[in-house]
Image 1 (cartoon, rainbow, N blue to C red):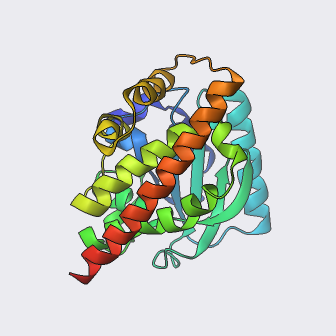
Image 2 (image 1 turned 90 degrees about the vertical axis):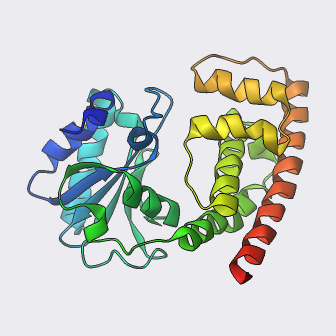
Length: 254
């Protein structure tokens, strides 16, 4: 057994529950990089199946994940994309995914694919390099660019969500990680991203605030502080995302 699974035994619970259904089960993200914080980090799993989930299989997945959320430590943090083994190539194709308490369809993103090709936790099955197309540094940079141009550009249009700690922390993390990926062609951990924020111009007080929450500490803000932080972070990220999207296009043409 991969020793990294000791921090998230719920993954083994999922593997046992889906025995006979899985071709493979893998984990990327913070658990794979050694940056996993129980109770704070998500668990980013990918299951390889021999066919697209039928209605009956989807009902079983909902029941299984619901039980893990109720009964298993880390069950609510466990997200899993279910990918048929004959549909692994197109990163835009949507797959059934359990996340945030529901089963819905979304793509297996380019960054998730790159993480699986780097140093994944292989719970069972063939290595991801056997069933995922290879990615070079240009592919990985374009995957980061796609996330900025898609989800995060849309998120920056929504003023109210930036009052939430979740979006502030995740937005700044994504920016720092995307900066490394687009400009240097490499994936970095959230811990590395935290250390990189200051070099991008994030104020030290805001970096410290993000670090405190990542360590499980509560940071109290009054309404005025939350409003000012939201306005600053949204404006800052809007400018930085525009910079990285331009840098990405320029790099690809060189």
